[in-house]
Image (cartoon, rainbow, N blue to C red; front, side, top):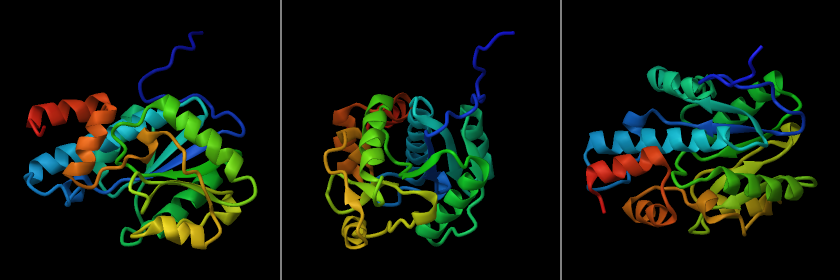
Length: 225
């Protein structure tokens, strides 16, 4: 019997790997801070960012599963086609509650995997960079939750903790909130893992790092830079 992987098919997860928890706003509502672009352009970019981020997660060997939380049923179909599992967002007004909901569902489905929350707007993320970041998070989170700060040193792009201690503090100055909560900072994570995109300055910086295919195609088609 052939063992060739099919699109949308994931092998059984390895024990002691990771489950990536990725909250995705409906693309129609995402990236409102990309000022100067019309609604269609922002929607295309938000969708490309999420698809590229999830693709990088799925291509990372230590990631056994990817669980996306989104209320966009149509876009969820595109994410499932990549191989991700999707659940609706029952706490769409509270990102941290959404992530805790996702962690609880991940524990129910894959109790041997460790949860890591990731932003969905990491369009330059590469699987080998994510693997390096997860290795550092795995070491750092053995005794306490750990996180990766964003490139600006204000927010957070990744957060890891055991299921029973999973309590992310995303939103606003989340780097300080995580530090105040006793989390360990992984400050020297790869640049592509730290480069989330909120505005056009961020997108230009991500472009300099090298965008993943979908995001690169949209940026080129829009002629942004």
